[in-house]
Amino acid sequence: MTLIPVNLAGNGYDILVESGALNNAAQHLKDHVKNDRVFVVTDTNVSAKWRQPLESDLEKSGIKVISHVLPAGEQTKSWAVLEQLTDWLLDEGAERSDILIALGGGVIGDLTGFAASILKRGCNFIQIPTSLLAQVDSSVGGKTAINSRAGKNLIGRFNQPRFVLIDPLVLGTLPDRELRAGYAEVVKYGLINNAPFFEWCEENSDKLLGRDPDALSYAITESVKAKAGIVAEDEKELSGRRALLNLGHTFGHALEAETGYSSDLVHGEAVAAGMALAFHYSARRGHCTETDAARVERHLAQAGLPHSLDSASVKASGERLVQHMLHDKKMTGGNLPFLLGNAIGETFLADDVDLEDVAAFLDQAE
Ligand SMILES: NC(=O)c1ccc[n+]([C@@H]2O[C@H](COP(=O)([O-])OP(=O)(O)OC[C@H]3O[C@@H](n4cnc5c(N)ncnc54)[C@H](O)[C@@H]3O)[C@@H](O)[C@H]2O)c1
Ligand SMILES: [Zn+2]
Image 1: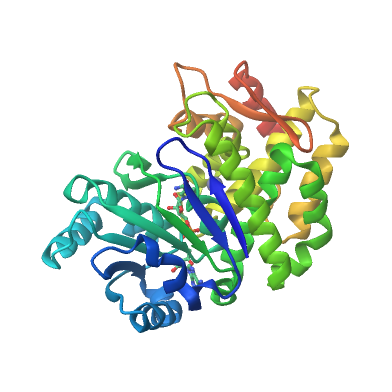
Image 2: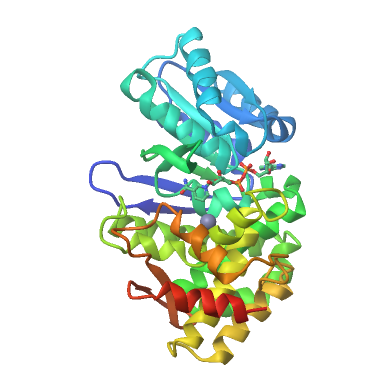
């Protein structure tokens, strides 16, 4: 069992990583439960596999469980579903002192965390992330949001959970493709600032993708520590430190936008190709070697992830892809910041990137 603190002044919390923790949920969560009840929000897929074990353990300990099952999928992060969820909570008599539990992937976590931040001016919530992406990324750090007509995650709040319970064994039922997509964000932590962890990924990705519990636990723990550390330094993305977490995301968002945010290319897949492009672009600018860029690409390919424009099936012109980047919310004052690499494990934020040069690079990239 590993307990990772997120050190924030006034709203810090712990993240537990433990195989089998879901079956002992009551023991881990009881200190946070008020009114002897919890409101569990989940989606159809996760409900079918994991709602019952959670509920039965909580109810054995005298904690009443009131559950709401939402449709699985990104479209659940919408105003309409937020309204439906908050209406349901109010109908059920939820109080400010109650606690919501998000049991699911990033969609359920983001929506539930946002609902908790506005229900009766704010109640508490706990994350029980069930996808690899949610376990290593979205459940940590307190970003919560829904999507709007203008784009993804544009309506939301920083709202830290009270506790995060991560059980790697729940990944046993996660579809293969979702596991791989989450793995891209794991590799990201190695590339950002931890070269030994990237090496570990190179040596252990087969085990991890084969759902070896030890490999999963280790990778999740390292990832959560890395994210918690960065979030503690820059909770609200003010200093630029937290922006390091966006490695591969500017290129990635362009690919996602080009494929219409469809199931042709899911987020983690776009990030994988985006990270390979970011390193190749770094090599073009002379920051890192071509050898490093090729090594990043090779590992992502070995993990069965898109690692280039071709493998992501994106054929758009460089200019068009740059236009997509300009619509990204991370634009600040007309300048598009790019995460680039001096080497594997040494990334930095560059704010002097010439977008015409990026377009020319993408036109030549394969
Ligand atoms: N808040 C943040 O900091 C942050 C960071 C990254 C991503 N996100 C958000 O997270 C979302 C993506 O998260 P995601 O990839 O987890 O998507 P998701 O929540 O849609 O989950 C992916 C799919 O896996 C299913 N699933 C989840 N756990 C399962 C399990 N254990 N067994 C079987 N099926 C399971 C879900 O039902 C869904 O179909 C996006 O909306 C993104 O914007 C947020
Ligand atoms: Zn991401």
